[in-house]
Length: 433
Image (cartoon, rainbow, N blue to C red; front, side, top):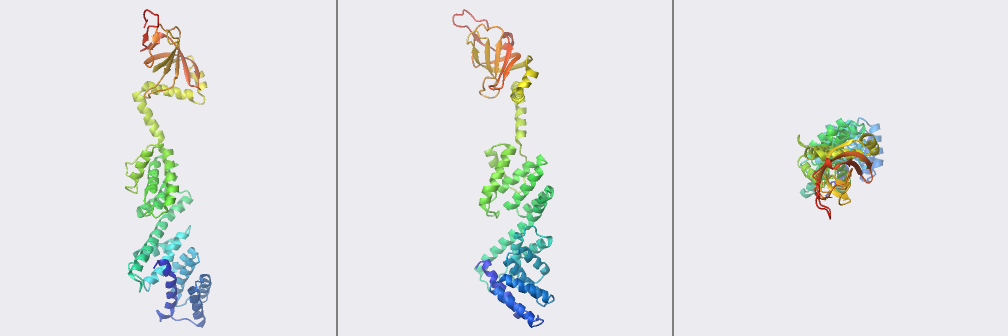
């Protein structure tokens, strides 16, 4: 028997208990009894809106009734039954510390309260305290209601435990929502961290933590590694034990994480998969955890390039300046008619092939190939046929430039070339170099 099927039966039993289980209580007069009787019949018929009106009338006319506690419990159940969760919680505030007659009596009150809190977007502190006590009470239940078979209790208790856990998770995250609403990122992060500590396998708690951390990271870039760790964990936790809809995790959490990761670190599926696996080890990264940004990766790459290929790194800086939107202006004002420092490149073409006055150079650095980027205009033709695909050193004076296609033209002379290999031209007796 499912717990939700038991709830109406328990409500009827509670009404009957008013007259039989507690004989020391007495109705003040016939009218009070008639109000009780009407409420009992309305609840039995599941006419909860009518029952609420009757119970509220009873409350107004007989505020000091012997049945105040019993009446308040019925109001809680009825308010919950007509989907007025906030009123159900408010009605239960006065029941704090009330003793229960048995497990069934406890479930009748605490189950609807644990459910109700999850339907209130901005609960008051009193509502939170009431629901928290109810959820903890449900979680601690270990005895079945009188007369319930063991298999039914086992199923019902699992439902009670699940409801209690869900309520406590929600309660733990209420401060996060409140802080985020006022853009108080630090308070939201602190509250979310406590929620994750309490429910480390909760996808939602981890998602809230990641969201609060992202709020901080937008002002403090050092927070991004922690933020991405939390998003990775929210995307990787088991949705069943994490108590979320797998479809929501797959359609919302995972794509959001992947998008943020690519924006911060760059597209790297292998590294992203590794982070997801790493995040499953613990709810928070250790103190040494770091994740380089795309800018940091580029800086490190540039430093490595500067160290291993200083000439190529210098050329890349020159090329970047020339390739910029104002590259033509940079050439005209900064580079034209100026001496260009020595570079090394690969000779890819000569015009003409023998005794050329023009050499085309590709600056490759660590790359295996690159388009022609430099054209050397010689004052005098070379005396032989230059060997292609060989590295040569060169210097010159900037004479012309085009951005598309990218081409920098230098004027130079043979004396400023090094490493050039010449062979005799057809019909020549010797080469001069």
